[in-house]
Length: 169
Image (cartoon, rainbow, N blue to C red; front, side):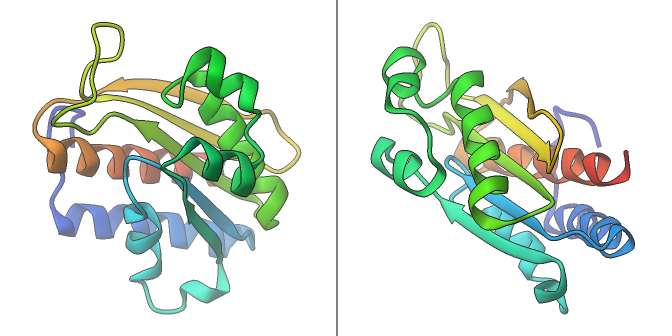
């Protein structure tokens, strides 16, 4: 699957199964902190039977206040860089690990469209962050194409693929 390819339900399920396998192998609980995907990453993971053995928590934080209260994102970060930024996603994923006790977490924030984009942050702009407990958080910027569903599907796929890599390193 290439970044330009919109993944199918079967491809998302396979990526979720890969995360599950890695989490089970490492005996690690995982968590998700989502904005533009609206809980889709958590859904893909918890669609798998037995997910309670390795899935700790998932939180959907669309508003600034939810990002602050549920993930500990600093209000100054949001004021300075906005919700769709490297700084915000790094604070989101760090908050998910700290607040929900996971060994590995993923966070996503972006502009799925069809509106909301700007010249600096067009529709399809997505930041994804990953963090292992005890390590530094890291993030990657993506520019996905297509409609709202396509952007969200590509985000879920990239988040899950990165989470499996994080679990295996």
